[in-house]
Length: 379
Image (cartoon, rainbow, N blue to C red):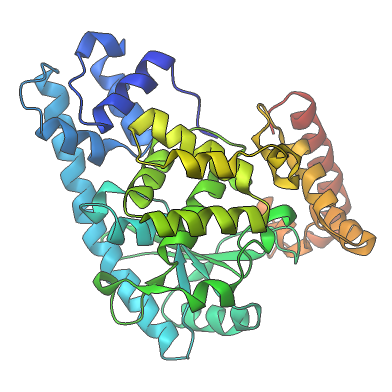
């Protein structure tokens, strides 16, 4: 999980993203450290672009040169990723599969000035549950292989396939049949709901589409909470900033109504207020007030806003979010006893003649190690 940035650095980078002049000394870091932070936080392209608009800001020239080189390398990688995206979407469409692009990839091509300004490690896509086997066959047919994920109907609700191209660039596609692995959010928006309001992404070919403006902003608000324990990352706040800046007042009202109806109003209020304070995002006061009205803290999802949540908190919330005891027990089983194939691959014993005989010991080792991590707050 991303480390929390020191306040002066986080404030300074937010000011840079707002287009303000920020003195170098106020950041309190060395050039190499800032480069590392920008890379870790996916801010290299954005910071480089903003500095280009402020040529006399007084930052070290060596730093600016390094940012330029890294930004150009990122733009080159993006050209290769775009080509692969179009290839994958065309291959899926040939089998009548039309996924909905989620999170960073479609945002890069719809709300950012240039796609390379929004780095990401994979491409997330939402499909129907019954399409999973066909998707696997299509992706395998164009050179992709499955990564070693824990599986399970309740544990992950997704699978990832990846490959490396001839230029050494990795491509990973994460296919979801539910929005989240957390049961509280899993059915927040269904494939059919998103599909009915989906919009095309022409830059990614004839078959690319993503969530509509209101749905995209709702997902951007909920994403850091439901998957990342409410970690504050400037790039995610910037996603919200760009999406919100495009909404009309009528669309903001629709967002508020949808968030209340879906039980995530408190989360949306928190994230929009954060974007407004960090980046000056134009969010109407009435919308924040409607989302943060008394009683919203009682929403089941609001517990995800609590600070310093741990893995065991996520598991507890996930179990409680399932309506039936049979489903809860199945989830716990999937957590404690992943599929044997996953275990053998995780321990490097896939294909070993004696691997199956060691499975009991592997499960014990995994369980003890997991409990130790929880007790040491490392999980």
